[in-house]
Length: 188
Ligand SMILES: Cc1cc2nc3c(=O)[nH]c(=O)nc-3n(C[C@H](O)[C@H](O)[C@H](O)COP(=O)(O)O)c2cc1C
Image 1: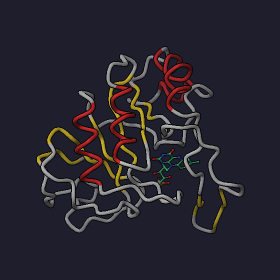
Image 2: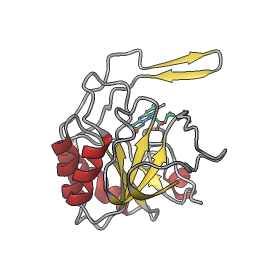
Image 3: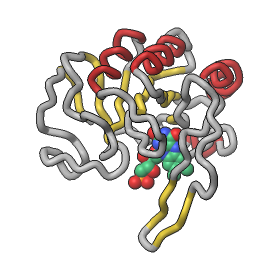
Image 4: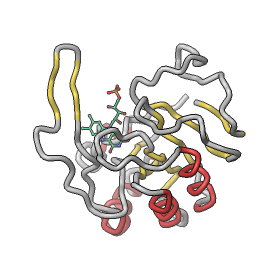
């Protein structure tokens, strides 16, 4: 089992020692273009926890590749890059751009962000396009907001992860899904 942060909840360049204490550092989601994110307030404390609606604020893939990723590569902890988009082609392009970067151990597909207006296409199309675009290991971050969760299609070599509080009726208590999607994949 690996210990890793939830995407967006740790800035490894601000807190490198925290990042190094993990087995893997997962980046905040990177999108094709820079995004300011949602207007404040973006985080609110509530009685039983906190709510967030950040809206995928990030510098965009060009700046990420040129400035952020080289610094993350110096940390000495495996880096998984979380990518997000608003069309299948966005995911494929992001995966393609990360494919030959040695700093990247794996790519996490964020198909689960509920805090943006545009809902991406089905998970199946995204995963299939991403798999074709990169040789890196792929993890797909699912959540209750994931559109069309059972449509992953005949895709191989993709491991699904679960973000947030998704409840799968055939999952074990530690989140391992024991049911069957129509895919040839491992579930973690
Ligand atoms: C400030 C903040 C920023 C986040 N940014 C991202 C993000 O960029 N990409 C992503 O996939 N999830 C993002 N998340 C969601 C977390 O990764 C996680 O899925 C979510 O907090 C649910 O986990 P929890 O129930 O343990 O809080 C963010 C969460 C917070 C609080």
